[in-house]
Image (tube, rainbow, N blue to C red; front, side, top):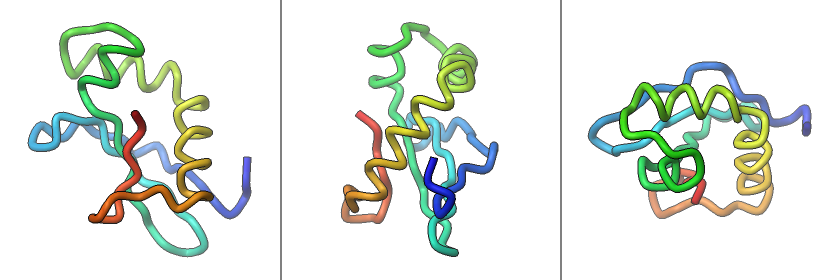
Length: 85
C-alpha cells in the first residue's frame, strides 16, 4: 500500500448515488471513491444496501487497492470522484 494514500473506515451507503461512498486521503487531500449498486451486485451478489455494505467490508482491501490505482492514474470523473466499475 502506498503510504501517501490512506482509506479511513468511513464508508456509507448513499441512496441518492445508489452507491457505497468511501473517502481516501492522498497527499493531504480528501478524495471521494465510490462503487455503484450495479457493480456491487455484479461482483458480490446481494439485493440490499446492507448486503452490499457487508460485501464491501469483506472485500475492503481489494477494493481499496483498486481505488488506489485509480487515484495514482488520476482516473476521476468530471466531479473528481473515483468510481470503481
